[in-house]
Image (tube, rainbow, N blue to C red; front, side, top):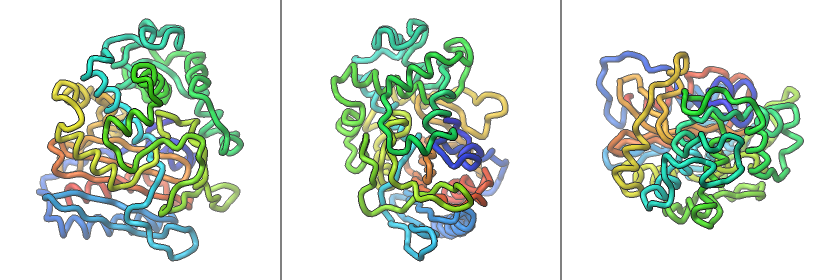
Length: 372
């Protein structure tokens, strides 16, 4: 699973969404009314390209507002549900990282403990890869083989309704050549989070999705496992194939697991973000570790600076925001917050057209929300 928006648009499959490069700007952030107008303008431009719909929930100045554009059903005029359910894809990683760091705060996980110590035999070099490396994608683990087979290759549709064991995904990642020596640098890989899901289960004794929902107080965020349908209300997602949009709403996401399998709503993700950034979910030491970022690798500055399960992005007005992006067949999402949690955004987009191919278009909405 690549993390760039370019890759999402190129394959219309399960990849994460990246922000566009920050632009130098001296203009001050505008008033909420102006921001909302700018967001609506950018969303309308985006849905003309995507062919489907978009919904954004923004929290600013103690108030919440939403904006929506396009349609929830391709070819029909159906308003996007203001708090519909959607597949959050790699935004799942932020939830999983928070769950793991809560266990660190409880003394049940050591950030510098090894995979071998928690999951004996899971990796051929598990004694050299730490929990911290998994969280920050510095393990060197590969995920290309699993992605090509189950997510973005020619066989992806064949496995649309198939159950995929996490151990199989880890096996494929373990057998593939390492991208670099453990800890040497950063490279985004789903295999890291497949392992974190397994580790959470080993330590807590509960399925990772259940542990996340329980420990973080999530209300409308859960892991559907083999359940392929979304609860109502929801917008439909599409995959452009054979020259037309294929409704891909029904999907088994066990091939994503703890790397991208959660379902949620904009309201629940916004509440989660607010509680996370205000220090209600993690102890100060663990929140500090999460938000301590390393510089993005050369050439990947647009993807954000990686922390532990989170990325730091720069907006057009210079604000630093923390969050994560996600993309799964038919859906793209982005969540972000200022460090103090007083400004937050949750964005969901459905796709039904190959014309949506501008990597910066989605992040225009993000910068409009935070800057105007």
